[in-house]
Amino acid sequence: MDFGEFDYKSCYCEENVYRLCCFNEKFESLKYLGAIFISNLKKCVPILYQKASESPETRPVFWDYHVIFIFVDDDEEESNDKNEYELTSFPLKKWKVIDIDCAFKKDDGELMTFDEYTKLSFPTIFFLNEQIAPYKPMFRFVPKQQLITEFSSDRSHMKKKTDDEEGFEWLAEPPEWDLIYKENKGNILMSHFVNMEYTEVGYLYNFEDILTLIN
Image 1: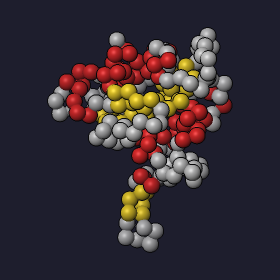
Image 2: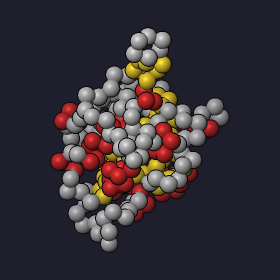
Image 3: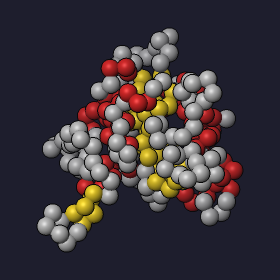
């Protein structure tokens, strides 16, 4: 799959995934798709094989959060209501992952499944290190329809206050497309989606939950 055809802006993974999940014609016919927000209570999660690393295989990038796109493309899968499903509705090997920021590509050109992505990005041996163990990832799965209705961000988390006339500078240049902002929701990216103590959006899983599903 050619990722070059997708809308992309570095450091704005949540908007990249939102546009991929909700606006891209390639995936509009799929029934089961959504976003996974990855973070933890410390808002500091190490992820291997990220393009931002100088040595992706051995040196993780510590993100405050990261967002990936996942979907099930098996037409044989059935559900009573396509709007009511969660990560555990299917085996993890059924979910395919698109992470444009991931440096790893399979030799056969196929997308990684979620179980493969988890093993690659968060190897269990990595968290045996007592210094890294407190930074285990947590995962929030948000199905497409809920992502459409709930997600809202004014990008203020990417602004740094300054003393000049404008009053701020961007930590990373923002995308050219319009804000994904809803007046009735406000700026809730960090408080509702990244904050892993908030339980009213999507489905939350800790690292051990995911490992159990893999094994």
